Length: 79
Image (cartoon, rainbow, N blue to C red; front, side):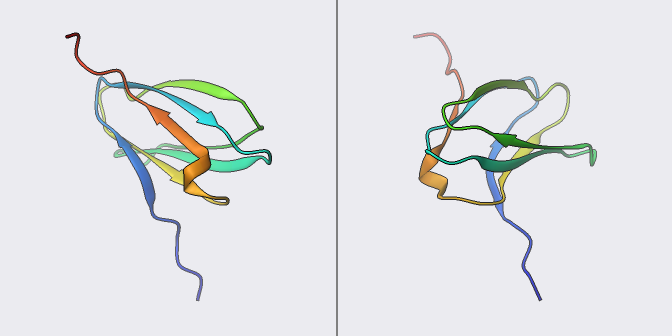
């Protein structure tokens, strides 16, 4: 029996994040909201996407590759 991939990172409601593939190979990810909406995509090497969670929390799930090669940057509060 194959185990489902674990959540890699949680993006909380009203939060935004930049998600970058720093690997030299494509990475397969899913963005899954707490309401069950799901988007699956393949990030090409060096590709960056911007994601906004909206009114519900969302999970970034890595399906293949080394987690060290998936960079999730969430802006912090201004200092």
